[in-house]
Length: 267
Image (cartoon, rainbow, N blue to C red; front, side, top):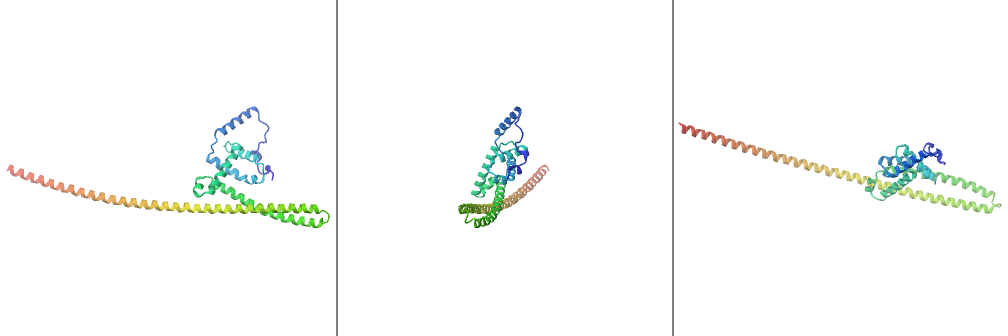
């Protein structure tokens, strides 16, 4: 499949050579790109969305340079200045981190913020490869029947050509068998990765529930402690009030007795 059917001409460099002023601006823009190599979260999300759209084209062609140029142009249209080399390097880094998170338990996948985007890209790629494998298998079968008829007609005239065709069919069948085995292995690994992902998700959910239960128990303990402290405070306040009332009564009695004594002496 040709690239111009899949890539919009808007994103390809089909303009005539730039003037000197344009070249200066391009050099300044490249320097700005190199000066700010850090990828932001939104920029990486946009990059993965574009890369997912062109993943089928990456699978069908060996010349990927125009595709990285197209991704760079589309990022620039979105307001992100990145060279094709930076896009390619970023993709390699993301693939490496994704493989690392797949090889370990759920802790790494939580630390990798683009795990779901990468998993979707590779899942869709596997589905396309499986569909392509089925189509190729049918084509091999039909082509083998046509060759079988040609061999019967030309058996006596072109024995050499017949042997060459047989070897070609055998090589092709061998390559198809290798492809099928590779796809089966890929599917098996994908299922294992999904199983590990589900297991890690269940472990995270169990851990979350355990932490919630622990937090609930801690809150209940704090509430009980607060009620006990409040009860003790009220008891102390009641005791203090009773002591003050008792002192006030004794003071009143003493004042009354003193006044009575003074009256007596005055008389």
